[in-house]
Amino acid sequence: MGAVKDALPETQAGMLVASRQWPLLAARMDRIRDQGGIGLLAAHLARLAADTSWRDGPIFTAAGRLVDATVRSLTTPPSAPAAGRAAWWALSGQDRIAV
Image (cartoon, rainbow, N blue to C red; front, side):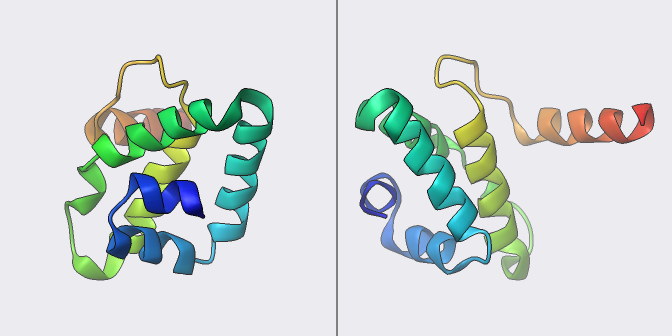
């Protein structure tokens, strides 16, 4: 929780912690910290802080978009180039078509 508060503004951190998915996100963050140290976790969270794509759209779906952005930041290597929201949605659509 402390790393999230350091990386995000208070309102965004609170929205993330209040989400139903928080326990899973916290577990993923713990695993990243255990495997690579606090520096690796900070690099993942820096990607989240730089991602503003989740802010686009209706306010009532902002928490879900923030969770999605958090999942992307935690599952993408910090060294990988940032993919915009359009690329993320296009990838999701391709996966659904291929199935």
